[in-house]
Image (tube, rainbow, N blue to C red; front, top):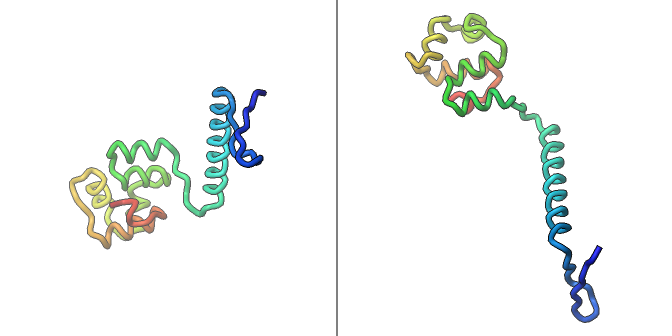
Length: 119
């Protein structure tokens, strides 16, 4: 490997390497950062959300419906856990009705979410 060193007062200050080695080192450094970020995310209590759920939310689908389906709940199950009518859940999912903060807090709790995830 051809490396050129630049010295200052007899001390190596810089290493000059061929471009292909430099780009290879950059790629390896980025990979290490990705691995470290992944390992940190595994230690966090934050829930990892599958990409299909994220894409549905980004595409503007109703958040209650997306999260309810991700949690494998029916509208009836969600309504029972929230103490609300199933028709109310259906209307909120279709956009015919907006929920009050109180209702959204109940839904968020039932879906094991923060309120911010629904609004």
